[in-house]
Length: 238
Image 1 (cartoon, one colour):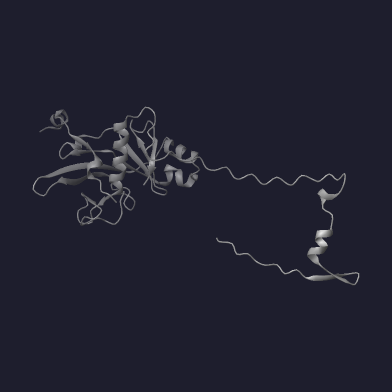
Image 2 (cartoon, rainbow, N blue to C red):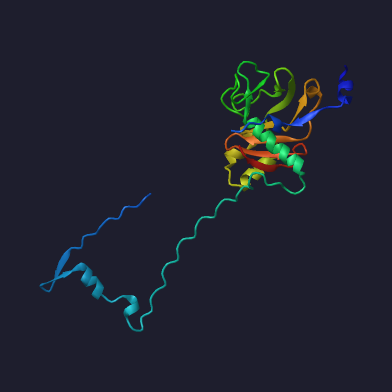
């Protein structure tokens, strides 16, 4: 089959959701009052202090206003809660992006087969999810299987490697939430790119749609784009 014929063949894609798995106390210190002698008469310091006039007890006395407490520091702008669907994004697309983030969190490039993904608990799982943390430039198509041993299904999904954020759109969102510029700048290779949808084997090499995830490896913030990097939406922290 030619590449043109493959492109014209009805393509089957899936959201990745079906692959997912469940997974000063203060101490009181007593103060000892020392007795002092005033004019030969023993008077305790506490009694002496009690007899001293205070500002409020003197007639016609104007007491200074107590100092105002310091203003608390302004809290950072909170990130939207995970699952907050922005206006203009369909529920199907938003749920698909969330499922994809959970999928990638549970997958790693198999230690026994560098072109295959292994899920947590499977033989060959490398010990962490989100492929690319240690091999950021190993971009490409990765296979995984679903179904049963008697009726397996082979799927492929694309890992995009380092995302440079050349327009600074993700960095801008990170800075709004008080992430340091060093940890938000795409020039520091902090971002990785992942596809949202997977495809049946044989069609994937001709197919990538506009839905992607971008993850900051330093803080776990995940952003979804549904228009091929035209805009980004905070998805949550993984």
